[in-house]
Length: 570
Ligand code: SF4
Image (tube, rainbow, N blue to C red):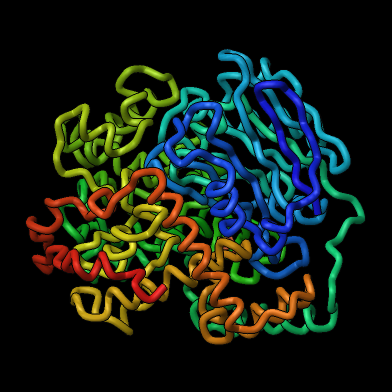
C-alpha cells in the first residue's frame, strides 16, 4: 500500500511507502495515530501545520457490505481536538482498490489560490480550480464529473468551506449521479478550505481489486456478516431501518422525550407524526421518489431515500433522522418538505446539518426569527451561502452563534453541537457527548439502540454502556463500516477478526481486535490531552444540569465522578 502526501505550500505531491507505524491501521485508527505522530497538538486548526487526512477503513475495497466509508480527519476547528468524520459514496472503496492507505494534505496554498487534486491511481497532480470557486458542492461535483468522467469520485467543499466556516462539511459523490454523502462533523470542510483545496477527483479504478491473504476465510466471513444483517429484524428487508430509513426512530425518540425541540427546550414535539419515517415513506412513494436506496454500492441495509417534491422532482438524495431532528423539531418545523429543502441548501453550501440546525435553533431563541417560521429560517440559512456577517456567524456553528447573540442555552459539548438526542432524556448519549474525544457526536457511542438494556432516564449503568459503545464505534470507524452494521459485530466479533485476517493475514484474535479498538480511543485522548483539552472542556452545559426537560422533567444528573472515570478500564 502507499501513502500520498500533498504539499499545498510547494504544490507538490509525493508517494511514500507506508511506515510500519501505520501499517495495521486504517480509517479513524490511522487518523488518530497520524495526528499524534505528525500534527503539533496546539497548532492553529486553519494554519499550515494542521493536516487533512483521507483514508479508507481496514475492510474497504473487498466488497464487505457497508464497509466502504471514507474517513476524513484532522484537528477539528470546533473541538480543537482529534476529529474523524466519515461519509458514504465511492471514495473509500476506490482508494482501497487503488492501494491507498491515505491521502495526507499538508501546508497551505497562497491565500486566494485554489486547486483541485486529480488522482489517477499511479499519478496525482494539482490543477488550478479558479472556475469552481463560489460553486456549491452539487455544481462542483457535476462540473468535475463532466471533465473527468461520470464514474470518477469527487470530494469537494462548498461556499462554507471556502469561507473557512467551522460548521463546514466535505461532500463525497457516490455511484453514478448519487450525491448527498458528507463527512459532516467537526468542521473539516474549513480545514480543506484553509489548504486551498476545493476538490479531489479520483478516477475509477478499472479492473483493480484488493489482494486477499486468505480468500476463503474472507469470503465466508463477509458473506455471513451480510447474511446476519439481512436477517436482522430491524435492518433486513422487512426491518424499519430499510423500510423507513433512519427517520424510523423519530417516533421513538419523541416518545422517550429526547427529541430536540425548539432549541432543546423540550424533548417532544407535538406534530412529530408529520416528521416520522412512516410518513416520509408514504410521501416519497406517493410522489414516485425512491426509498431503500444506498449511499454505497452493495449495502444490504439500504436505509436512504430520494426525497422528491410534489412534482416528483428530487430535492435531496436522502433525508435522515439527525437532519429531521435538528432542522425540523429543533426549529419548530413540522413539514418534511421544508426540512428537505433546508437539507439541500446545507448540502450545497457544504455544511453539517447538525451544527447548522443547532446554530439556527440558538438564533431563533435570540429572536432572529420565530420557531416554525419557514420563510425567515430559509432567509437566515441563505445568508450562510452568501457569506453575510450573520451568515458567517451561523456557519461557524452553535457555540459562535450563541456567543455572538448572547444566548446561554447552547446545546454543545467540546465545542460541537449535540445531535438529535437530548442528553437529559437519553443519559447514555450524554455520557458519550461529555467524554468522547470526538465531542458531541451521534456516531461516537450512541445509546439509543440500547435503551432497553439501560434505562435512558436513569444514571445507573450509563458509564459502562457508553464505554462499551465508544469502543465499538472506534472499531466501526477504523474498519470503514457503517454505524448501522453494529448488531452482528457486537454479537459475533470473530466475524470481524476473520474478515481482517482474510484480507491481511495478520493472525489477529478477538483479544487483539479489542486491544486495537481501545488503542484508538487512547491515542485520541492523548492527542486531546496534549492539545490542552481538560475534563471541564468536555462537560455537558450547565443549563442541562439545572433546567428540567419536558415531558419527563429530566435533568442531566450523571455525576462528574462517573464521567471522569469512564475510561478507567479502557
Ligand atoms: S445503512 Fe444506510 S448509511 Fe449505512 S451504508 Fe447502508 S445506505 Fe449507507
